Length: 129
Image (cartoon, rainbow, N blue to C red; front, side, top):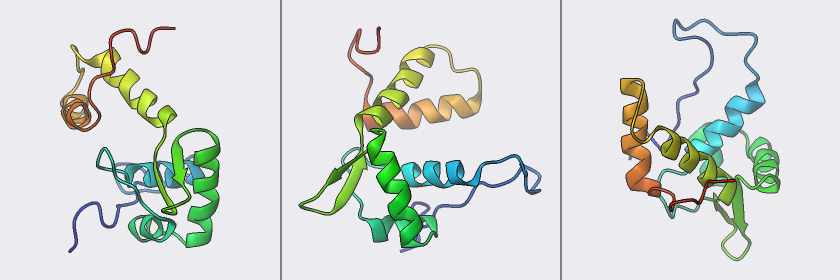
């Protein structure tokens, strides 16, 4: 059962495979955790996330606490699982809303095509401040 999502590939270094010393590893790890949540209603536990990211459970626990504190994830204590939080959804929705009619590259178009069906378009005016 080796799907792409089962074990995320670590995107460290440059596109030529060299390691970039300016990359902040904790940010890479945090974004890899967020990438684990592929489906709209997916909820994952610490062990599942650690397995997918290839990180120790203790590291994942600390990152999950931080991501929960800043609203990127929500914790469900009854299930002992996490799901994307409101800040993660707003961040993704703002990107989609800003670029919905004008993707600049094939990569952005692909991302848009993936995000809209999964998370939907934000309601009109939801991102206005």
